[in-house]
Image (cartoon, rainbow, N blue to C red; front, side, top):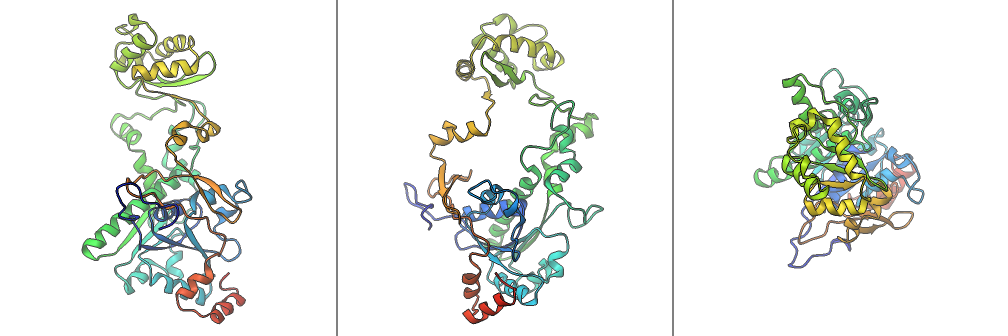
Length: 405
């Protein structure tokens, strides 16, 4: 167990995925976020990278002591080996590595892994108990199968951008939603496949696409369109079906209020605003009425929120049980007492020194998730090849030939 995986009070059964080995032919976000969580949960994750460049996310920026912010976020706790997969000897080394693995995950272009001799059918022919996950942009079939599928493009193609932004401007989300959605479905699929294998011995071939994952997350607006012929409108911070639900002005800023039901409306206007006359108002008494008179509802709420400073109003709303939140930025998130007081910050190692990181969101009562170091490019190549039985001379020969780094 790593120093970041201390048992908690009451004993520990160990990290859930200790003893599981994952080989990942990955880059960018979708596959790396899945495998980082597998590493957090205790799996050994061996990341196969390109000679020279490595995962191209290593070069997105140099924000974290000279390292890329995406890479630091997505790749802690992994081992990095650099292998030339265009060389027969390089593929042979990876095949030997796969021979010791429980899970293989790859997000190459469709068909690329099979052309290298690393396709699911070939790998599982030798080891049917193996779990192989293929991650793609649009799936392994269909008219968009071969298209490049960066996160923004998938958000646009699925229609996510059509419901995100302001009435005037469609936007992508501020985080790579389609990448993360696919990564989370890959993660849950792998865990489900491991559980099934534990019971039956059967492995799995799993396909996860960014397109399908994003479509799943669009269920609500998709059903509105199919059965009501209604396109959800872009409303910024507001909500198409609920009012009041928006950011409202205060003396010194703004606060977001989201009233989900009529009880919440009565609490807002009576307990917070001191305006019981608004509780049964013929334009505001029910959510349906408030949505029909949205502009007037918002105007009444804004008229009353302007009377308070943000901190005071936040306390009043909380005391009344009215859903509300401050409109924070990243600086305020980093300083947020909800993280500090719950001891959510840790440090992880990198080649450039220790960096801060937040504990993974899955919190086990008996053991803390592992938060290993972010690997340097090819840092573990020699050690992993030695585990596979290659001698120092053989590794030196592969390095001299440019097949490993």
